[in-house]
Length: 223
Image (cartoon, rainbow, N blue to C red; front, side, top):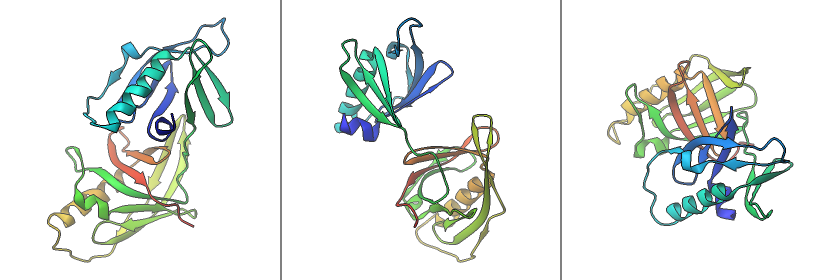
C-alpha cells in the first residue's frame, strides 16, 4: 500500500469517482447506502479508463490498486487522510489529501499544447515554472528567461489564474533542434491559461474553454 499511496489518486465529485491507478486515469460511479454509516461501493466494472500500457511495476501497482477499489465496502476519515476498508473492516488503501496551492512552488514542464495537440519532447526538460509568494511567476523557457505577474481566484469550484503579459529575454538558441519553436509554443500556452488543477506533484493548466494547455511535475519547493 505504500507504493499505492505515492502513485495512485482518488477524487469524488457529483456522484462519481476519478483518479489515476499509477498507470491510467479513470472515472466511474460510486454508491453509498443511506442507512449504513460510511458505506462506500466503488463500481469499478463501470469505469471508463485510458488504455496506456505500463509494463513491470506500473502494471502490478495498477492491478493492486484497482482490486482495492473493487473490494471497498466502507471508508474511515482521519485528518487529511482517507482509509478504504473491505466488508470486514480490513484496510485496503490509505490516501493522503494532496497539496493544492501554487504560491511558493516550482514545476518542470512535461507537455504543452502546440495549438493542435498536447505534446512533449526532450526539450521540455529545460523548461520550468516558478510561482513566488508575491504574485510573480518566472522560469526558463528552454532558451530564454521569462517572468510575469499572476493572480489567483475562485469561480465556484474552479481554481482560476490570470497571467499578465509575459516578458522574456531575446537570446537565440540554435541547438538543440526545434528548441526555439517549442519555447514559443510553451510561452503562448502559458499566456492562455485561465484555470488550473493541482493534485500533489502534478499541475494541469487549462484555457478558458477547458482545453488543457500545460502539464507540469513538481520540483523542489522554493525557499
